[in-house]
Length: 198
Image 1 (cartoon, rainbow, N blue to C red):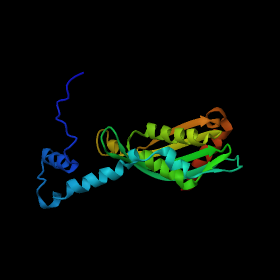
Image 2: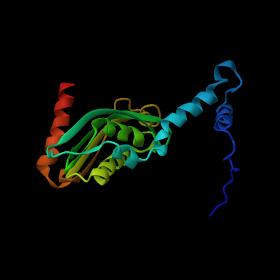
Image 3: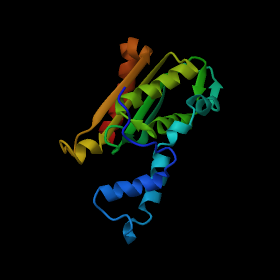
Image 4: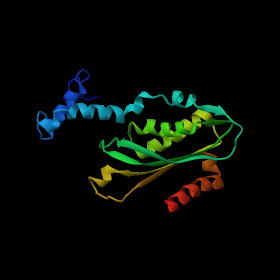
């Protein structure tokens, strides 16, 4: 394995690293407008990656309830903001979650918190979509789970191909959402109806 050319930076405060970054980008970190920027950046990054410090099992376990209900539960338009792991530029959009309960349901606000938890990590949209679906599937073992995320990526809008009006749509379908066409179509049609009425 090649030797890491960087010194051990574990003990270097993140503000110092960000100050060095500003300097290497060609600006003066000591000028008035940038004096507190490393501190603010460190706080922002801490918040934007706070999902690493949350356990999804603990998050959902606090709001699982035994309920005799076997119809589809859908939470639409969950706003999300995340950082693309390839460029550390934001991507943002909406998540739509559906599941068919099998004796247990999740408090609706926890579904939004689950999306936030995974979004507040360095991410790719495909993994984020799958992680949300897998967590719900593992923790309440429903008959099926469907997750669709629609997002716009600043790494495509601001750099590279610079396509300002492009968006990405990803889906994860588990259980009956994958095996039963009617279930999947019901979920997707409800999302589509919303999009047409927006």
